[in-house]
Image (cartoon, rainbow, N blue to C red; front, side, top):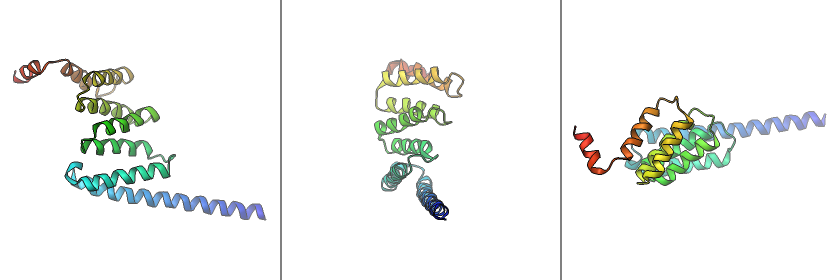
Length: 165
């Protein structure tokens, strides 16, 4: 009888935890939706920072949640929108290193390279694009990555001349 009662109590407790997680996720998604209505994180920096805080809180509270890779990726996007390219690159790095088998891992690596470009770290950006091409040779973004590598190798004068023609 005690075993049955204890099992029931554990089941109720686990259900309560799941319900809390679902409630927290719903709140997170509602806040995120508000930010999406703005379209540009920099246009509402306060809301963007609040979304980042809620992402971090959810990730800390539920480290095994299936939404973690997507939330890290979205953190990277919001940070990128705020111009925090180094922090953004770190978020994208977490996605493709900690969750390499997810659909968004290749895109996270590609975005990480773009962040390095924005930081004017051309060599690191080039190496990251090359890593992307090597890891995901059949990905639809490979041609874009190759194009970005070519552009990174051009001087300012060559770049201006290329786009004038």
